[in-house]
Image 1 (tube, rainbow, N blue to C red):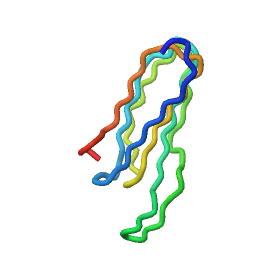
Image 2: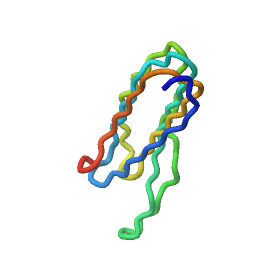
Image 3: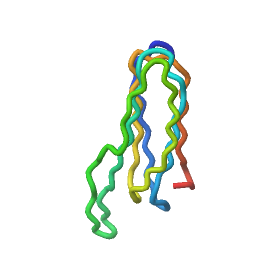
Length: 104
């Protein structure tokens, strides 16, 4: 990114696992980058289990000169995990890694 204002969001719904490893890295050369992770458990029509509303389980803002090295496993059970990254006049190279496909 170069001097960019942007919001990027991705989500993963777990079926076979009860946790979600999230890795986000990079060096903020300019501006700020906010990383937020939320969790939500949708209601199940199959088991009639009640859902849980979306809740923020991690949020941090990184400013110019800071190294981002987020490497966490969020173990809140099966559900929808979302990662939202907000770039505010940000410059830098950033990488997000989350499992996908058959790993969920």
